[in-house]
Length: 117
Length: 110
Image (cartoon, rainbow over all chains, first blue to last red; front, top):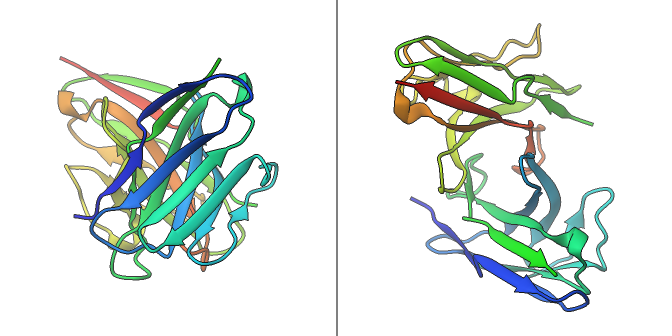
């Protein structure tokens, strides 16, 4: 089946630094990927839709200058948390629709836990 | 905007008992509804979707448009069903974008 990976799985950084999280579709191409954020004991909240070769679409309330998304290839989307602060600490999860194109099945990455000190 | 509500954060049942995890939604159009499951230390994965009308691991869910509900049911719970369950909605023509409910933790006791 389709597999989505994320790297790193866990990162700790100092306040003010930037952190890049990668999301890869391992055995299929994804023109669209989704980035979610999950706080402890809460549900997943969609942050943005990553579109290959074009700008990401951000959900209301998500700062596009803080959460930079780049979808440079059909198998890779990156989320960069710029000038991270403790309130950005969270679990970040990406997903991608599996093959064939247009299927409604989403495949999720294992998530990346970000802790900002 | 669409919304998904799972009224129970925690549901605890004994092995062999019936299970019903509730999900209600609000959306003006015709949505696609899903149930996702997350077992301990594993990633989120699709359990079932309403358009397939299938039974997975003994679970079924029927879309009730009149009551705007998509409750997940299983007649006899097993210990291995213990997990976090999320109901999710994808608006029509939304390109697979999902809105999740708050999740329900199911604990099946021996």
